[in-house]
Length: 102
Image (tube, rainbow, N blue to C red; front, top):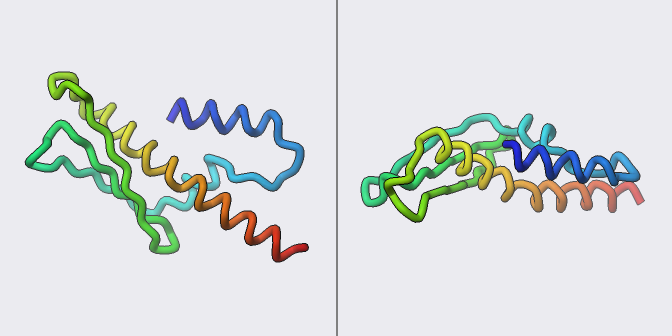
């Protein structure tokens, strides 16, 4: 999550309004997380996150060399991949809310 936190902190530092998607707000919407390792590629980590509204996202990670597989890093990178996919969706939802206020 370090890279996500760095990006979120950089965005917060230049933010001029409260209208922004934050990492904390997205993490708070995660209701469940499950990790999978396919039999055909056991060094690949797949992370499925279910959000509180029932929507799901899938993140994945895999080292180029299977010998470099690390369980903890695989989970970390796959979860981050899923969260990164959430960012544009949350941005769209924020713009919709902002348009409704105008």
